[in-house]
Length: 401
Image 1 (tube, rainbow, N blue to C red):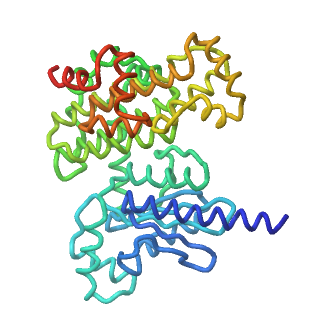
Image 2 (cartoon, one colour; image 1 turned 45 degrees about the vertical axis):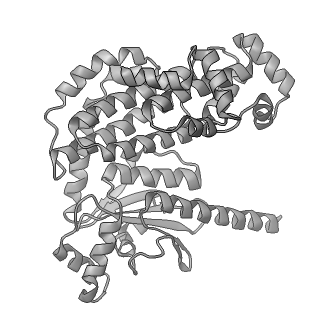
Image 3 (tube, rainbow, N blue to C red; image 1 turned 135 degrees about the vertical axis):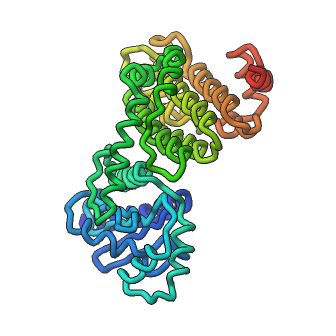
């Protein structure tokens, strides 16, 4: 029995490392895995060595929190994520959303006992790391904790330790979060959580016009507004999850919109994207809740479909995932909803196809493949049957609006 437990733990360690390697390739924030013997793996293989984050997080390692973060005197953000039921932990960072000065780099070099001749090397490395404000940095820590430990923490509640000037950075960010919440008055949160996109339109003019006195915590007004939108998207996404959206799927959607925020070049573009995001969230919640049956089986089927939109789905696949008899599942769903499982799968996928046609420039053939349709022709057939037009016609009509 002991050998089985040890084998499972070794297998999990291998899986964890592969996940961390892939996650680093996406976010590009330095991640180091430590165990009882010291540094086990540095996923930033070409980064500066030694990573100053190891020095910065020493205070966090004395705190008994599953996840925590700190902001150094040079405003470098670093975090620790402990891996449950083991002696392993991650050191994440550093990351900063400000350009490092030479004097700050010299202080960091001195703190880790390296020669001043390496200052330029350190600055090049730090400037190559993607800029993450505190909100997004905390979000990354929470994602890692969820992926490794299955824990779902609110990013706002992550414990932190500050070092010198670092306290002002966190205080500004928290003050800023209050302004983000102003964009999310109770009626807006309700529209998202209960899937009422049609009620959002009339509220947006007021919301965006009221957002004129945001504290300037970034180097430009545009950067400030971007950070505000990023934080508001995070808060809104939690409302959507409460409304029934799958947590993992929601994280993917949020990351998609955060990338769009970064490429916006004006406040007008950000305001338009902001409105688009909230309506999208509300529409997704409404779609999840189109099945109103009280049947637990029907709800499980619906959740399975919505959480696996980008996979090839059939009644047999769903029955296998739920470990239930396919014939019973199909018969029960039809009795409760008046439609077949296949019809419902197609409805949900077509709705997602419409969103992608409206919000992206992806070719239709690529959308078809993403959504797991057997061919572009089959997507055209299903799309026309449900909407009365082809995907091409839908995209052209939207472009004229």
